[in-house]
Length: 365
Ligand SMILES: C[S@@+](CC[C@H](N)C(=O)[O-])C[C@H]1O[C@@H](n2cnc3c(N)ncnc32)[C@H](O)[C@@H]1O
Image 1 (tube, rainbow, N blue to C red):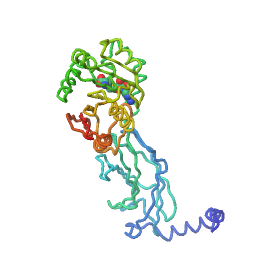
Image 2: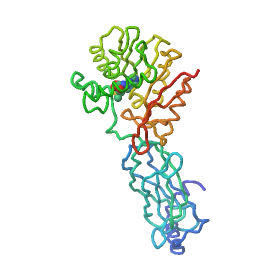
Image 3: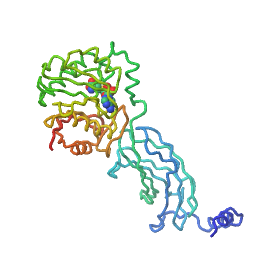
């Protein structure tokens, strides 16, 4: 039928009357027969990503595609159910919601339904499953993929951080959750000991990518021999200037880098590349490009030490610069693509679903 004619007909008084009569003649039945459980749910304002724990304002369009009306009330109402599923399609441990239909749902008549739903409180790739439910039995399910990222309030812009920080006073505070300068220095010693366990010797040439205010430069200043060398790079101009003023040995060099490039050109000359709390702030593709830079600058025998926050709820990576969460297997796959095999040299619980790992990567080809 001509769409214009159809629209006119649908708005006509006769048509509305007919529809009203149809409702009188066919009041909603209590239990929807199994063969009448066909419906359509469209989430009309679905966002591609949402902040962890945020309240979502959902607007849905519901259509009963069956031949009989569905009751909104009575003893066996049909309702709308919303559940979070993990990327594996398993229920996520967050309470589901069941929302009453606004009115009986008549065949073919679209109804809108609006309600609020809390997003998962952790970062990950989720799906929101929406279905009709009657007597605990669901039907007409639709799933919408949605990435949950960290709250905006926890995002970080390192350029802004360094611009506003007083590094002379609190260089230790801007680069991590340290309570004091002593704790920062203790952590740098522990990291150096870990690097020694990974093969570091005083004659090593060390590349520190995302060197910050020189936590490892400080730890290595009196450890590396004159034959050894340290090269630090960071996106923060103020951090690099601070390091240049603070660490002045001739075999120590600092350069400001870009998001995905390391501004040294002594290809194949370093023994160890370290990324401490850096891949926790870069997006997965940036992480891959930075690792490729490390490979370019490392000797074939060279090794990479890096820590990563991981969660199985994430397919590749999700989050923001304040905290990036990667899938562990995806990170190891990236390493393998660059010819490195990864070994776990440390791990700590991070949150309900995430763990923080320290990896040592060695060239396999
Ligand atoms: C948490 S701080 C850690 C600093 C230092 N590695 C440490 O452990 O003390 C993260 C550092 O990574 C730097 N950063 C972030 N993204 C970077 C990138 N793409 N390339 C180089 N540095 C980066 C930041 O500017 C910041 O100094």
